[in-house]
Image 1 (cartoon, one colour):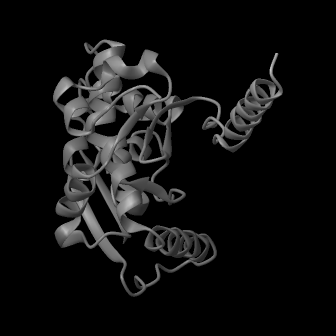
Image 2: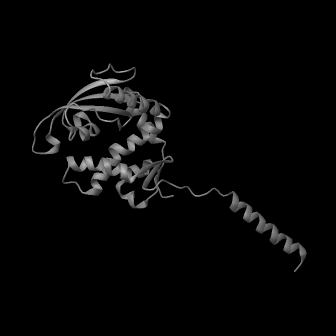
Image 3: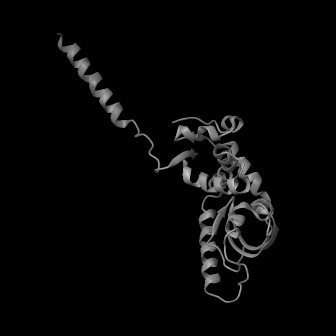
Amino acid sequence: MPPSFSLRVALIAFLCALTACERPAAQTWPTGTAFALDGMPITAEEIDVSADIIAQLEPDSVTTQARRIAFTNIVLPRAAGILAAGAERETARKKAFELKRELDGSATQPEPPSGVLLQDRVGVATDIGLEAWSHASTAPFGTWSDPIETVGAFEVVRVDERSNANSARQVRYKVRVYFVPYLEPTSMRASIEERLDRATLLFVDPTWAEIVPEALKHRLHAGAP
């Protein structure tokens, strides 16, 4: 075998090995990740927490349907809001937890700090918010929740009144809410829609792909790794 041929073979082998070494490692995800929105994990657990709320209000819904509604209307917009907010989310989270500590340690109700809204909400689940409803449906009267993350905000919730009704969706509540936004409330929906318009959804666990509506798959350029 000519020496020049052996040299070329060795050089090709060296370049192939070098290329393999430089190839980036496959992305790894936290256990239980179902999707990733622009690299941010969305877990099966958080989808099912929201799907359980839907199932309580719509007991005739099957699991896949409840998960689809929860993902489309709660989990995905919340994830897009987190991406849109950047560092503002952490600022709001800290403010919400500081407020909760103040509520727990005081017999009087503090004035809302700058950027925080104090709201009285009355009505059924869709009137007071699904996350607030989830707390209010079981919490003792007069107790404040830990901060609950909703779409674009954190909420600290107290239930003051709860009516009797034949179904969960008919129960009426009166709740007081400290609303701590990390997106501007007046443009929150627009900010989330704009962020979704330039986002990509990755099916980390392809078995969850069935809960994503076809139109949403197209919009988010969704696909497997």
